[in-house]
Amino acid sequence: MLLKFTAGEKKALLSLQKKIGDLRKKRGFTQDPERAMILLVEEVGEVAQQMKRLWSPNYDIYTKDALAEELADVQFVLLGLSELLGIKLADALDKKTKQDAGRKWKSIDNPIPLKELRETK
Ligand SMILES: [Mg+2]
Image 1 (tube, protein in one colour):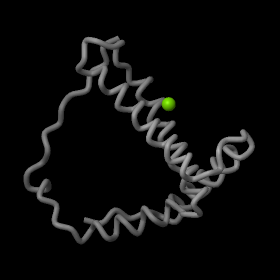
Image 2 (cartoon, helix red, strand yellow):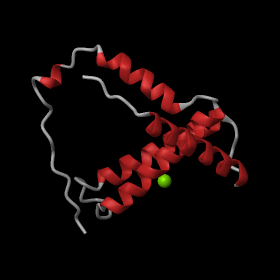
Image 3 (tube, rainbow, N blue to C red):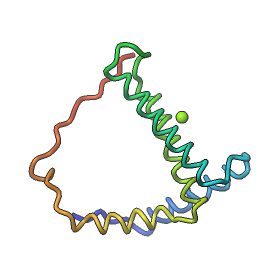
């Protein structure tokens, strides 16, 4: 099972990566990839923080909007980091999905059960 990207999809992602890289530069954000990596981990942590609200009664309510905002931050920083490193993420994604296509996925025959996500607001 191969996930194929069209030339348009790859071009769009490459364009978005470039725009984000340019915007980060204009805003004076760090151009140091190691620092950008720290920011990425921070944003991933913020995704976890939002998802924790799904099950823990000790924090504010879970909302899909707040989670979406953090996922967008992750995407923003990931594309920015890729740009800083000179890695075209669209090409890397395309290459990786081609590699993964040859793997045997045990979950095809035994799908991982889905847990329902519910907003609590
Ligand atoms: Mg954030």
